[in-house]
Each structure stands twice: as structure tokens, then as C-alpha cells.
Length: 126
Image 1 (cartoon, rainbow, N blue to C red):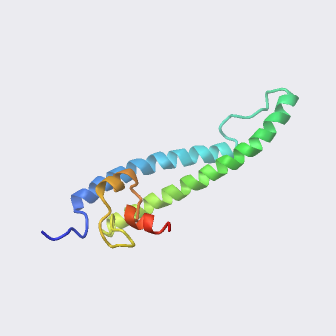
Image 2: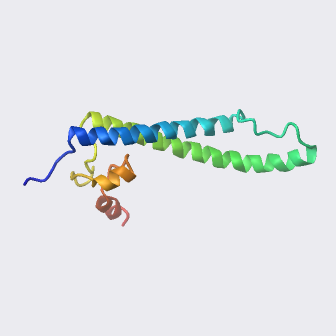
Image 3: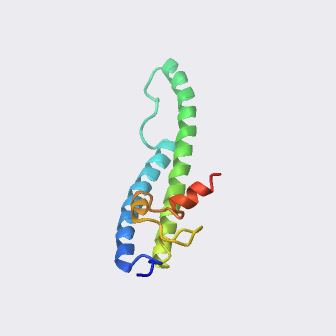
């Protein structure tokens, strides 16, 4: 039997469902992070004492930096998922961009935006 060169349409639909679910959650998380950065989450210190406010502002600076990093990471994840949806449309989803072989189903279920097989990913770390 010849080795499969791409996933079937039914398999691609299964991956699309997984990606859409993850994309919805990721976008919700990203919006929450953006609201937090813009101060729209209602978590401010306007109603607290001045001393506490000074201490809180220092912590907020660190917190905003971390939140910005998280938001950037989340946006990159969303973009990866959106790119995976395009690969599903093109029927190139699940094909390792290094080896040209199919990425195992288990890996794609765990990391649906993966473009490298484990072997290719590990060989690139040398």
C-alpha cells in the first residue's frame, strides 16, 4: 500500500473543528488581555488609599509588560491557527514543510498549527 501524501477531506474537517474551537478560545483570551491592557477590566485602584495606589502602580507596570507579552504570544497563536485553516483549504494541512511527509495525527491534535514533524523540529535544534 502506498504511503499517504495528504489527509482525507474527512480528516481535514476533523482538524478544522479542532482548530475552530481553539481559535474561538484564543480570540476570547486575546480580547480579555487587550481589555486588561486598556484598563477596561475594572481592576483599577481609583477607590483605594494613596499609599496603596503608589505600590499598586509599580506592580501594574510589571503586570502590563507581562500582559503585553502574553497578548503578543496569543496573537501569534491565533495567526498560526488561521494559517492552518488556509492550509486545510489548500489541502496541504498536516504536511511537514521540511520532510514533505505527513505529520502524525496525534501531534496535530495536540498542536493543530504545527508545520513540522517532531523529527524535523528536533533536527533543526542542533
